[in-house]
Length: 95
Image 1 (cartoon, rainbow, N blue to C red):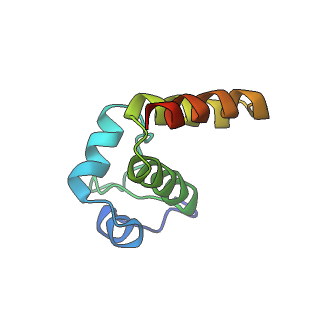
Image 2 (image 1 turned 45 degrees about the vertical axis):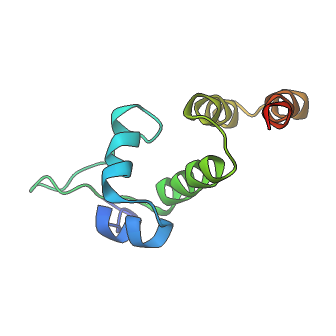
Image 3 (image 1 turned 120 degrees about the vertical axis):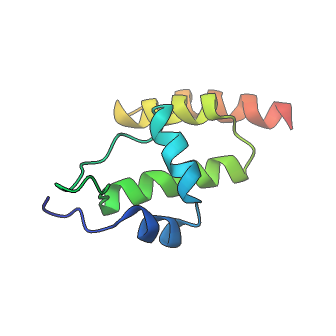
């Protein structure tokens, strides 16, 4: 597992997200299921840590999990500035 050097505990420490929350995000599909060691231990890399930080920051800013899911989906397909603007503007209108 080249590059996958973080256990769930270390990921939690680095990102400030509780272990139970990380597992929940995996369960609902916000975080992809990470590879596991032969003993079943989850292992994470820096890209997954960055994704988790993005989710945490979005939650801190008051975005719903559905909004974050949409923004992550947009990230995966390289959204236009207008698409991101529309999503964030709708959130600003709510607050």
